[in-house]
Length: 249
Image (tube, rainbow, N blue to C red; front, side):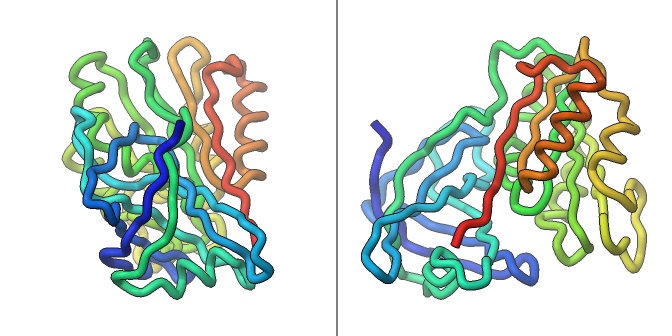
């Protein structure tokens, strides 16, 4: 059974024109245990009293040893007229929401034997990969595997946590960051920038069925198109792990 609890907002700030980074702690003071890649659910009611819930990947950068954390960090995309946007967009520091979890298996598995991970995301779909960062040096040192983070945004303003990923790539052997801009490139281009969709960067990396496992997270159209591309290349379905982010009102 998943744990149910109240979350209290500790801090929040906008990280894109329509995305709010929110930091919560459990109101009961208990630490939070999760596996990077998992998500929580926020429970609330529509205006007519009907219960509903929304799922958000945990973006907390924790410890490589999996120790419980104090903070639960999520990235919330605003949806015009959305009930969750009204709730979370207007939540003040100190306010509380009801939640449950963690849930999900969009995680890095100990049984994996692959040489390379292809981590593909658009929008807030990059959040679970942020939580995975502490595991990457450990896996690279232990298994020699490498990681390619391919992250698509329409513009630089919508590239969430871009500076964090770029710095991590600069200082971490075995990890590379490929920011892709589908609509407008940066005003001041950086090394490694790609003008185009994530599929352009992915194809350039020459996915290898014998050595790669791919993770796809974000916009459902991107996930479906990239999944089909990888199948055509020859990646077996079990080597493509998917999580779709669907906007709900």
